[in-house]
Image (cartoon, rainbow, N blue to C red; front, side, top):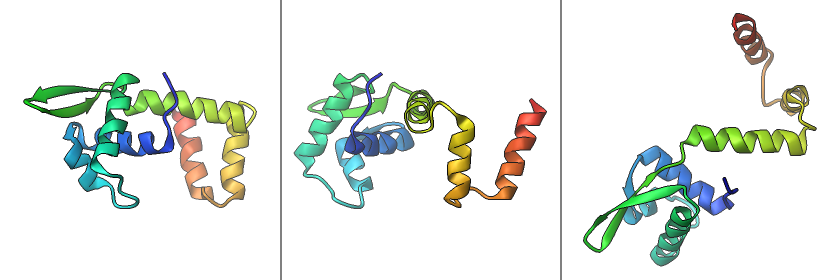
Length: 118
């Protein structure tokens, strides 16, 4: 599975959320830095070439749908990020977020409770 560009990830997030969409529907979901329709269409076709989406044809238009589940993408690239930025240590990752005040003590207790239940 290839890593997506930031713009491709943004578009995939929309397609995952919508489940299926025409390019104009994806365009309507982009709130900032909206690309030209043809540029967006090219990005979606690139996602198809990379194996992330497929389409159903309706005349000259295509309705795209994801074929890579968001969970699979998340798992692959979160593991890569943890390997690259936290020396493959989940402890280092959690402590980073604690130091950055992105996770509270209550949330950490909830995580501990989930771990202990398994």
